Amino acid sequence: MVALVIAEHDNASLKASTLHTVTAAAQAGGDVHVLVAGANAGAAASAAAAIAGVSKVLHADAAYFADGLAENVAEQVLALAASYSHILAPATAYGKNILPRVAAKLDVAQISEITKVDGPDTFERPIYAGNAIATVQSSDSVKVITVRATGFDAAAASGGAAAVETVAAVADSGKSAFVGREVAKSDRPELTAAKIIVSGGRGMGSGEAFKILEPLADKLNAAMGASRAAVDAGFVPNDWQVGQTGKIVAPNLYIAVGISGAIQHLAGMKDSKTIVAINKDPEAPIFSVADYGIVGDLFDVVPQLVAELG
Image 1: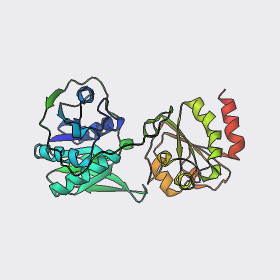
Image 2 (image 1 turned 60 degrees about the horizontal axis):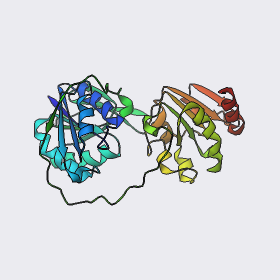
Image 3 (image 1 turned 45 degrees about the vertical axis):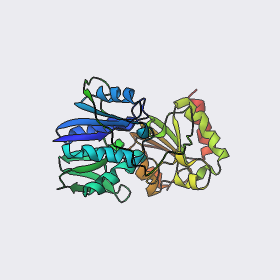
Image 4 (image 1 turned 90 degrees about the vertical axis):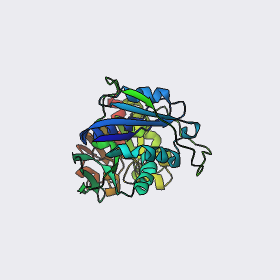
């Protein structure tokens, strides 16, 4: 058995999600190869070769891979698919855009957002907003899988010495073209990779009120997040959203401020190592998953926490 991991990268470096996906691929058994499809992405290919547990890196280089267009990357994967028993990608927007196309073209059932590998053909994935775990056994000749990063430790980014093999790039599909990208810039850590996250909910009351969380996030070098209710209310941008329809996170510390704890939000953060909840409602569902809870007015509690942190 040989597994192929589709690397998520920016041509210069790998995204952390790739390291978690390599771990899942290794647990499925057999060798692990990594595909880096990009433009002038030699640095990303070298980074992939250094990952512990990777035995080969396939580097496909073409200008039309520069922006990770799913139509082109999927065709590159399909050109290589016959050699692999498993094809895996991170369960990010990148992986979710590519692998369904691959699964459809291979006429196999995709296994989405796995959090555990029980065997080469058996995997676990959350369903019903994480309230149940489904065990899925696949008899398909090729297993096409997206991997939820929070379910697997990251593979070591160094220590490997895989060979980098250049493969012929498939032709440009011509089905899509990159037009532009609006990237939210922040000096804070990226939400899905942050070790500490401070999130606010509808209880914040307004977007202006979110500023009260900034000193706390600054003290902790934390990313800022939010519940869907806060995002839908227009308090903060969409890319802050944590939850079933937002980003799935599992930091070392998650501080939920003014978040009631709807099931959809819990699905996105309940695997955090330590959860601290601040809410004036002692019956708020967030307290059911919190390791530490503070019942009180967030506008009093948060400044006190900042003062205690010095």
